[in-house]
Amino acid sequence: IGLWVLTLTLTCGAGAAFPAPGSRASAQAGLSHGDPARRAESVAWFAEHGRMSDQPRLLARLRDDDPEVRGLAEQALWMLWMRSGDAKIDRLMEAGVAQMQAGQHAEAVATFSEIIRRRPAFAEGWNKRATVHWLMGNFKASIADICETVKREPRHFGAYSGLGMIRAEMNEPARAVAAFELARKYNPHIVGLDAEIARLKALGGDVPADPLGCEQQTASR
Image (cartoon, rainbow, N blue to C red; front, side, top):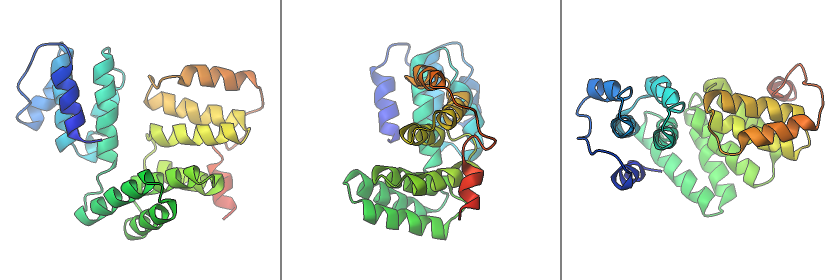
């Protein structure tokens, strides 16, 4: 996902046309503007120029009254998460994503592993490797990488959603609910999540002391 997606959405969407914010201060002010089109323009600015420290501003827009603004904020957060602050690492990330999308899973695992080796504090390197492991059906490895992801970025609703999917597939409804509820905590408008949580809760089961299973995962290494 790139800024061109945000720009296209803004261009095709309804609402008044505003000049793009020319500075951080104007973009920040625009996030709370009364017109959703202005808020959307500001979200697009942060998608292009934002820093990791801007996450709280975009997370707040996930609760925006306007669904377009919410959708753009979600895309912008993914764009922020993909930025390591190191151009070489970012190029490796692009290569790994391309390999993953091409079905070259072993190659993608190797690329994301190299990213993790070089920059272990970079949460999205772990999350992308978790995704490849999930695609390969290696749930244990995927869970391990998700736990490393949320250790570094505890607001990563995408990682929690993935963990919930895996726990549900493993027939662990209580742990799936725990993961999905954390995803909903940070992104309350994920499509279909409320219904899935309700379905899993109806299956019953006690919530374990380690609801996500990350402590168990660490102990098993």
